[in-house]
Image (tube, rainbow, N blue to C red; front, side, top):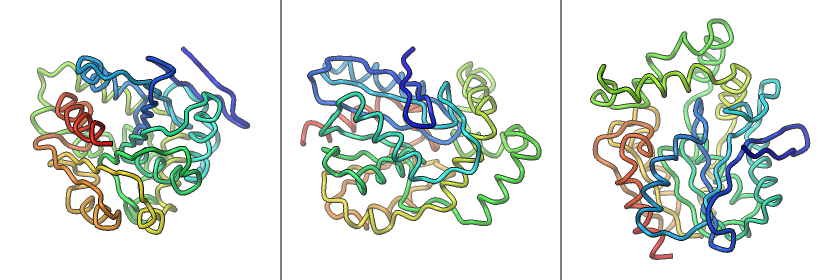
Length: 264
């Protein structure tokens, strides 16, 4: 395990592969930790990709500190910028899923010099409405994440993945409900208050958008609007998965990434 202290927070991260190779940085979704990328990275390595793979648990998730809620998206953005600076990672390909996709857009908005390309998975320039996030924050503060777990998991995963004989499904349910309430609600507040429309319009690095066809959180029609904002971006719909294609379809997600990456 590796940790780094950045101002008010200790972040948990993993830094694997050839440190002299191009950096690929993964930023995960609300209610998950960096293990969601495991299978995709296995697939990328199996394809022969020589890269530096950097993953981290964002503020309030996994083994990173959970500071008091609410959070601002700028805090998440500055955390990732601080981590990249500490690790000396420049000219990186940033992959962000859901809130992670907003975080990497925010990094581009503040420090475009750090960004070689963007992969935005199951995310948007703005996610959800204020009333939705306020209702979710209230429910979780009062009853824990378990109060919403069924609805969340239905948005996360396709019906076929949620079958009773899939041993991975309860594991990801445990990942969700063991997320600290401060981290879940704090990040929900950050999502509520963030609108990256102008940043999306300004993106000029190569960008690919990915979305699962059964995503119940940021569905394809929502991501299409972000695609329209980013000039020259590529948009791919992965048939079958819900909100987390890196879990449900890691090989296909890795294949699309490799096709994009080879064109950089």
